[in-house]
Figure 1 (cartoon, chains in turn blue, cyan):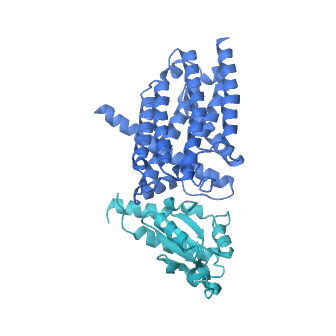
Figure 2: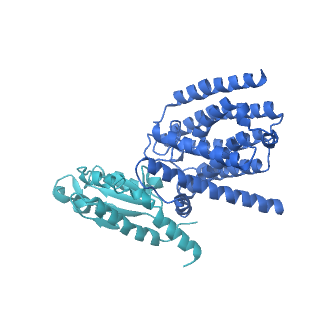
Figure 3: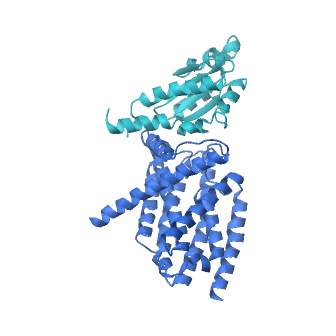
Length: 281
Length: 149
């Protein structure tokens, strides 16, 4: 009973934080474009409106997939809150991503099909980096559990600075920000309309939006592991990373998937490898 | 009115997503419509987002005359929008066919094909008038019955 209440409290707090971060993102982006931008609470209005719209599906997968994606994101977040195994957290979250692609691919729309393929490329590029990061956590702390980072006694960032740079690249992809927002970004006018989200309508789109909030909170929480020595580091480091990604989003154009693989598998892997050799050498 | 109804009504008023369809306009009204999104007017302040997808849109803005070729496109776009939805016709051409109303290929105003909720006159319609029209449309949008929750 107590565990259920605690889980609900964690999810509630994550929803609130995720929505406000999304509002902050829209506001900051508007300011960077010399506009005033919507209020911070805007994402909540958007989601409530979407949940109260008509259901429209061309394939039952489009109704099931958002639920699966949302549950996976919520499970991954709860696993993190309970100081679970980072590998399991990444796998659970990745399963949700697969359902998002399934739903997008279930429609004959070429926009959603191409974006589904791009989403798979993004996962291929990003998840491998995150698994290397989990490996580095094991090499540094002797455990895959996220509690290991706090028990280390000094910031993980000192030991894994280059891996942190690689993680920032993965964060850009996960937050769906330029230059790697290939499969669907927050802005309407993209070459693929709205990417993987194109064919999701009303309540289903609303659920996916909520899942995205949880996803962003989860990745910022993973980011906080790099400075897990105290509350200040755990707040300031993810916040700085979040702001850096938004600024990057506004100053860069969208790159193609070849560029993403080049950066993700080329540059980020070399950085990670150098870091790991340095760690063990 | 219950609390949930009130919340949904507020959310709808605060988050109208627009779909802009150029139904054969001379681009005069289109330029004015898009001007609403620039830093000068910045309608995103009020939660307005210009979406490129009828499936995500709440308000359909139509500029220009309807002709025999694009009437089906207009009808399909309207069909693809989930309920509740409202339509705003913009400019003299969108209202009645404008100076093209006598042309052999022209069907007339937008209301010949789909039901229109708000008419914004002008040639071209001024951005202020378009924003006014959207605000009127919002009142209709928020008052519409709940879709299946």
